Image (cartoon, rainbow, N blue to C red; front, side):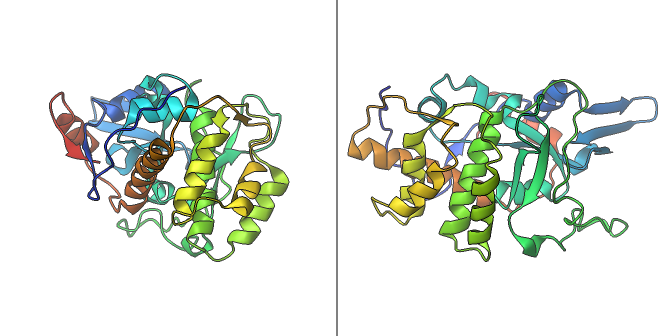
Length: 291
């Protein structure tokens, strides 16, 4: 595989088009809408809470961040074409502030138990400080906090599911960031996940080179982080695939910069709830916005 670098990313958030009708595509894929036109009621399913909520309270989130150089980065990450990253299998429907903490990589989705098919998924918070925060902080009548979200098993309306590869990559990014930011208790989190290896039998689909790039980027530019790489590699023994990758030092650095830019843009987002239909209207062909 050959990676041709693009120009280095700008320091400001990159402008790029959103997928057209993103939330509509996601809700159709998951069969997640309850629409009673006679009573003007539209509810959308939240995969984490396992219930229908007002449509405006549910967001469709990308699992893998929206990369600046999607075709090239997708090929390096997964060795395939980039269209699936734009599709609804790279998504989940999340109510209230659940999307906020998922985007900040403080909430991960992992398999419930090894060897179970179809895979059941559960939510786990990586930052205990979030547990007392409210899922719907603007709704005074709702006292639901993230204690109720932590360890909750996801539920789906139809047969469609998210692609495990994307949830796995999100999980690995979250662990790398957890240590890089020196979050309290990161050692215990890493030790527990190393022991249970929640993704150990999902399949071989992540290139080991990718983790080296990400670890180097989140290690403040240091070229060699053997301890971090050894720890991360423990998660990869049956989930990685070593594909030949032709990448010189400059391309290696630029790829890492692009990946980190997308990850940090996603994590820095403070947008909680928006009018998704308005977003879709803005996302019509020709519309460009910061995402």
